[in-house]
Length: 371
Image (cartoon, rainbow, N blue to C red; front, side, top):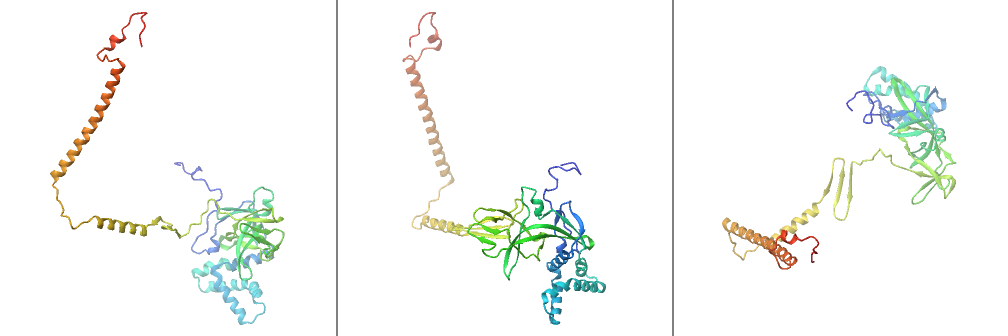
């Protein structure tokens, strides 16, 4: 650990390290997400269809661009345009680019400078990868997983379906990295979403959620931000057949969801959990202890008997008496043990307690010792 610029087990890079984020003052939040794609990426021209879908998705999921989205939609409403949603999706990228360029020439505020790379749009060329690391989790495309025993292509994303928030389950078929000006990047997953309509594509019971892996939907909305996805696994469902798989959600072993404050109530006490400390509120129990102590002291207090004041000499004399009694008891126990040993020795010597050890052990050769 004292050596510099040498990798050891104390300072080596984590296996699932997702790199460093671009957290500058003039960087949008969508450009500051951390991810690390694999190095086997291919740099090529993005198809126009995928480029339009990804550009719109990035614009529609950027908080700083929400005001401009509302402004453009209001202009379309004032113009009484038919199919407002489709026109808004088609025309907004170019309208947003012109709007930001005009504001950029007039005023070079911080907010406009931050929006400038987003308004210019991504490069027509991008990189596709077979795997990446996002939020400390490895993701692979389906084609890469087919060559391995492990599974890393399953994801779940929360989204809206018929004005209701549901979980969309799918598999990653491609990983696309968009490049913007000023070295800003965005990573997206191109997915195939399983059809989750009731009974046809998804069935739930008390313990498991099973989905049909042969039916798909939302084919035009196949892209999501990589940071929006969570990994899941799909295992075979022996009950419903080969076309059905059970969704297995899990918590990564090195990632933890720590609540800011959580309260657990029990019958006897209340446990508060915070980020800083864990303490137990014993206010009710401590109050009861104080009340019991006061009641006990009130019972011991007597007004009908005069108090007796003792001098320190009297207390010392009593303590000395107790010490002498205790000392005599210890000596009495020692005397008893000595008496028992004396009697046992006397009986072993046949009553001749005065015989010396040398005399008892001295015998002639050939004489038997009588026992």
